[in-house]
Every structure is written in C-alpha cells, then in structure tokens.
Image (tube, rainbow, N blue to C red; front, side, top):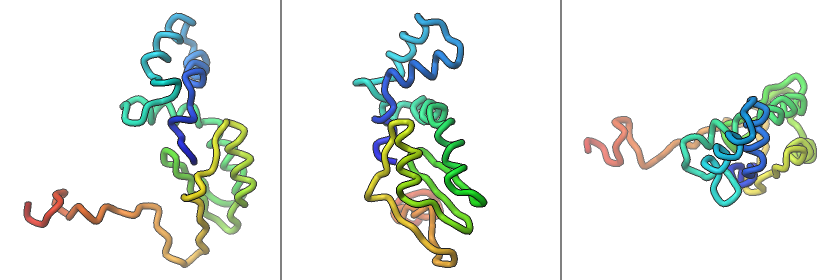
Length: 135
C-alpha cells in the first residue's frame, strides 16, 4: 500500500473513535492527539493499532479478492497466496474503496516454488543482535 499512515486522515481516526462509542468531545480530543498534520504519524506507538482498526473492513474485502487462497497484511504490505493470485486491478479496486493505493515499487508476483520471501531480513545484524559479530 502506498503511504498507509499518511492515507489515514484525522477524520478517519475520528470515524473509528465514533464507531468505538466515544462521545464527540472525546473523539475530537483523542483524534487531535493521535493525528499529526491531518494524518497518522509514522513512529507514534498507537499508529499501527489505529491503522489495523481502520483497515478492518479492507482486510475482510481483500480476503474475497483471493478466493480459495490466503491474504495477510502486515502494516502496508499485502501478501496473497493460493491457486490463483488476484489481479493488480482487483487489488487496486479494493484498496480504492477505503482511499488507499498500490505502492507501484512494491507490486510483484511470484509463482509457487520460486522461493519468494516476505521478510528480507536485516543483513547488518548478526545472531547476537549486534551489528558486528562478537560486539
């Protein structure tokens, strides 16, 4: 997904808080605290949880885009697997219903048995968690 946190506006946060049953004064106050320059800020500890809640309906819709397969989302990364992968157009249409877009640089397809990976790893870290061996 392209710019997930920036795509979730303060108004979107307010809508979520209203659905959770908060009164309007609390909605306004909390949304002002949880948003920065009219979007979810990257790095604020609450942003991933809010993004997950905002994307709840999107996640349900995406499961229907890959019938007989599997859909997983980690933050702004979407993963599909199964006998038939969704088309780019189908994914883009589902994302657009919530105001999201595909991140062009991240779109790719891999056929079964090609050894794809959803986690590129961190080559600068070693098994002991430090940047250099034995550090």
